[in-house]
Length: 315
Image (cartoon, rainbow, N blue to C red; front, side, top):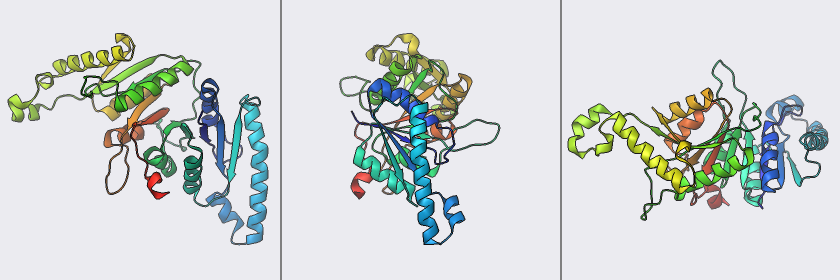
């Protein structure tokens, strides 16, 4: 089975929530854990200065310290009997080193700790590296915060019950990928699973202008909610889930999902990413990007089945 790649915090004595959470998943999935850290930091480079001999000594010392730290972390996580590989790199361009490893080893999942954040509002704060992974890595990406998972954290999967294939099946494409990954997480975490859709309130001005062109289910808030409730319950049925596992929220998707995640305590939010050819780049899609930017807890970003990474093109 493809490994689970953990991007460690480069501070030697920092807590490693990404490893703690990845270990729980890898054990259940019988997957190898691949631990990655880049020892070359801007602060260290500034302190060492331009002296090549000092730089070589600093690199050797940092690498030696990390080899010891790897052993400590593996022991602390109870992974002495588990298949673990370690990768220490020294690269001014961490993203390039990480990209090369991902393309070589093809992990099924990358787990990364979100950057430090400050302020009254607890929110996931993603570094440029994390956004690169979310947008371009050819695999799913789990962004985690410091808060440990409770014994049975719930999983909420954001889906779009409007989408269906030519045979009327909704559990296809990105919806299918999201539900499969969410179910796999729920099986490990045993905290319950809900499929969620956010209903945006109908625009009354648009309804007045469009008149009869507006579908009947969009004409008022209650009719719209009832329509999506029925569609979401049908999607649950197709996924062998109960109607009680259908969760309808109202409002702007990014705000409603972030608020629900914050109010419900530690829960894992699963959402889908889509590829868009915009000025030669791949993007998450505006709604998903806004959700990630507002999230107040762990997020699993699932790539669509035909996701095509630009890293494939660039070799």
